[in-house]
Image (tube, rainbow, N blue to C red):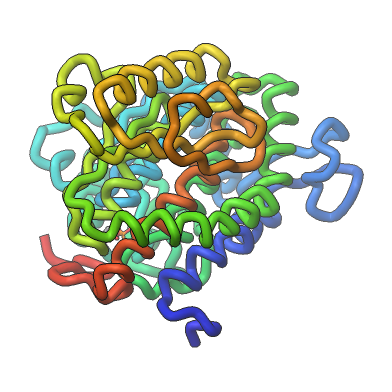
Length: 383
Ligand code: BG6
């Protein structure tokens, strides 16, 4: 059942191209080129999620604020999704951990949409937050991977990720499928609310179309990452840096490492370095840096390259995750992991894949149980 892989996590990492394709299927409609519509974005394809259409366009136009609630990995998917939803739907989006949300007396009304994100659909903290929001009149939308789980049943609409069953405790394919689902929600909202330009819609649809093959290429970094993890088996601390959507992706890279390799790891916003974390850098400190595309995000790219120079000057061992063809970081990086080109907002979906492999390989190098880490459960059904 592991499909020849030594762990479910390895199998699930490799299933991501398919998980994304399945999550997107049937939600990009109306293109002229083929049934999926995605191939001809300029030919009238659009994102349409039937479950959101059922809520009524007036309901969606009425939303003036979105709160995404989730725990763990799902909360990082939420943080990434927030950038895209704000950009396309022009609604302020905030992300809160479910267990914090409930006890802060949040401001909620019928113009607030609460989007919960949960692989299992059973996480008690998230379920209680959804019920709380519903009681206060908010619209609730569930992003969930498990058909008919409690959270989607308690919600006004369910937008399922179709990642397939995820067995490993550490989430991988459910995470990237959650990001895809949140992006589709952002595109649907942007279209209905009239805030999404045709050019942005077409670019996003093209990016979705190219994503499964880009992710398949990212999966192929496995061998390179395995070698990296092999020499790093004794590492006691690893840092991850990113900017914009790369920041929550860095947080996720760090969480994976804590969960299954039991290594101290932290993710930082690269811009925050000089406000504190740079004090942690000394000789040999491994730092993964998620480098934005020089073509699609030139300003952020140059800022991240400066950050790399700063930490390199203080002795960091830099592992740079870059877009293929980006040579700017070569003089300052000890290791370079090359990924296919994609749109700036879509980068976390490919960048996280080598980080997932890294956690898995480090866990394996330490002789740990990759799929069943100590102290953790796949789904936490107590508060
Ligand atoms: C944790 C799991 O306990 O719950 C994480 O170990 C997961 O992997 C988190 O991200 C949230 O779970 P769910 O099912 O709500 O997405």
